[in-house]
Image 1 (cartoon, rainbow, N blue to C red):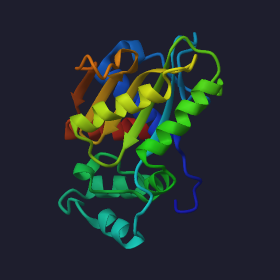
Image 2: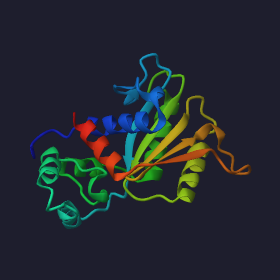
Image 3: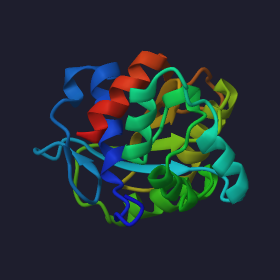
Length: 212
């Protein structure tokens, strides 16, 4: 397993499954493509999936995280997590699989990744869609105020672009924030942002389905 090429499709599947489960059947038709990662076949919606975290991580700390939280009384779950190489959301977010570690290691912090993705959508890099969405896996917890500030920052960046994101999905281990970027206004708060709780059981279901 250690020599297997890292497969980012796991996270794209995880994103699609979480959207369909939490937001409904309107997301069921998304297919895994490229530029952007999730697309409706009729080009009514295209969603780019990415990740954000601080790149400064010590290998020793990650090793400890890999060892932490493993339920010694559940041999099947331990075996499944280790063999898959992933662990997003499992063990209350304490476990990081060896394949998943590569995903986070290559990530950029939130501000920088948003700048990059806004630039790409504005340039036409993702092709022509009626609506664009940006799904970001956030390893660090964000407060509600952090989310609102992120919405405002993204809206300011793309304010004068012809092509822009109308939705942003911020995925934490235990919560999904769905942000309407078309209705961001600093002077007329609150902006439109809805949060959806993700239980540990749901995390496990998302994880297992994403491996298929």
